[in-house]
Length: 390
Ligand SMILES: Cc1ncc(COP(=O)(O)O)c(C=O)c1O
View 1 (cartoon, rainbow, N blue to C red):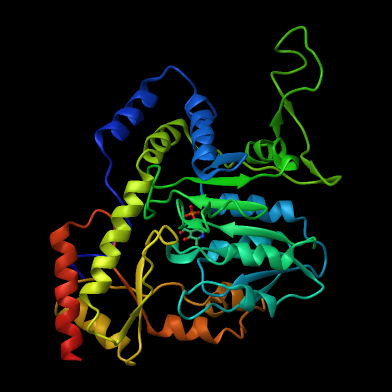
View 2 (view 1 turned 120 degrees about the horizontal axis):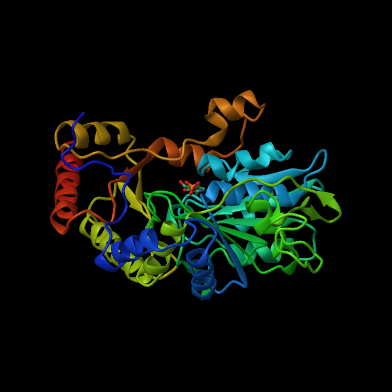
């Protein structure tokens, strides 16, 4: 189907300084990976989010894979994950040997809360994944207080929430690990793929670069000749005296060069999205069939703009928006337990009534940063027409 306004997988356009930075990195007579742009991107990213250590990786999924490996799950260990999130918030933890316990979301904020996590805790809980879904910062400070003093590892999935603050502190910097995505659709993208993993804990500082890059590291002795016994060492990464196998999750230099530039305007990109979201929501205030989550602060970057339909006519709405108006609304975050992958792994059952109800009634509007003001107005006007019709 050809849409007048599609739900695009492309978030934002690039400005000249970003394109120039990419071209400069392409021309630089340096390796196109693991070089100075990576170092600069990591330094600037650490400063931006306020984390001691951040490590660039090729995707947020890789950052989640690394986090899951570093949890070092043992038999019967459980990880608490909302059923309402993107699949890679979850499956890396299955691969790493944990059993998933599905947590519910809050119906108004559409993310997990201290309460929805608390009911899933057991003596076997070893990790918790907290996605700041849609770009809204979950109550991560309260969740951290809940597990204080335990040996539970918390992972913030900040894939969608770069630049979002909870009580003044950036999402992704509260927990043991924070992961960020620079995928094509995100508020900031490093040419379609990219990610970052953040941690304040010193024990991961030397480990993560090795895990990310095939176990490469320096020899731990002085060498007379740089090529002897080899150019560099490959060692077995160890955490708590247990080995962890490495991978190659490196992010290229051109992507890192663009990332450095984009960090200069991520606050502006987020602010523009937030202002548009509020304009959109307020323009539809007279229609109480749609429940939006309205947040006028840096707690939300409106990566996505979603509403819950409370009239029971969600599918009719999406169909009319598509067929009568040529506008592609979508539904997102199929409860993970309903996917074949998870049900085939014995995880098909979940007691997550809010997640189910939200998914079954939710609408995600096209909201890429690249939309023009006129297109945004066209979506609003079309929404009004369709709501009046149904
Ligand atoms: C909540 C969430 N977690 C994880 C990911 C994975 O990010 P990436 O595509 O960079 O691997 C995404 C991206 O779609 C996401 O939205």
